[in-house]
Length: 484
Image (tube, rainbow, N blue to C red):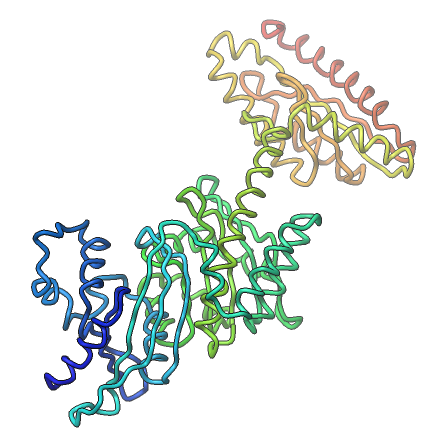
């Protein structure tokens, strides 16, 4: 490249008060970018580079030429994470003559929100520049916090879509209804075949789809993800360590991620995914969920990336609040030792169910299961051993009454309410007796009652309780040494 081209662009970038650089961009015979190099940078860019990537600098000892040698002529990915989408934007500016203006959350990478501005530029003339080499001007500003005023510089269709989504999320409708409305709007806006919102709780090794939208011919996201193990979703965290989102829009992108997460990419191929946008919801430094969009309009990838990252910023707060309320509900309804429903939840459910059964009776079953010999276990092995027995007892009950409501009604007493048929419920009772008949460990005193059509839940519970005590008396007659 001639010296005159360098001097021309140097004069150009030095005329800007924002950090500015000109990238030299080359592409291969297929039209894909294969090289992006810093060609020339202004003084502001050099100082910003030292502050952002090198931990700062001393103004009095700043050496512009030394910094130029560090930057100019090097590829961009020697200084920042390689990003296929950034390369796509560079390609559009350098070779397609597009002006690109984006405002994105890059706090995870740099600690700042970034406003990027890219312009196509050409030297006045240089006979040595071939058709597969071009240039683009890149400028940016950094903000520690999200600046709402920057939205005024976002394109009207993006800003109006983001505002519409925010209004929908803040209306008086049920959270899940609003979320499904927003996700349907996102799917249509991106031209995607499917879009979904997933919550993600790493500590519980659990993820859940809470909203989705798909074309009618596709099976639901819940159905698709029911076949995908937690480890696959967990692998996304590593892929997102150095980027704010994952966007796959070509076979080359697919192969890039195949090297990093082959098991995940295999599931994409098995499910016929051709393009994908995955944006994390990050709350207090942890990923709490994802916006998942598949088979979107790849011709609008830049607009889509900018839009979904902005929308995700607001979705994150809504999902965080939802998970917080869900956790509170869990804590108020679940026994923390055994994981089954607690006494408070049982009282509320019994009140509601008793009223419903009085109005519209239907067959139901009730069982009281009380641990025999828990006091003996506590006395001989300590309360830790007694707690282990309670946890094991709850696991056995969940295994037997897998589709019924199980409550820890008291210290060593569990209650089961079931709508199984009388025959099926009796089979479950027999299975429980087989599993819980060890007098030195797990042995339940069991009382149960089937109500065919009276709808009197509390009376059924009283009958089951009475039968449980009769069964308990039989146990202590056989094993008097274990009597409390």
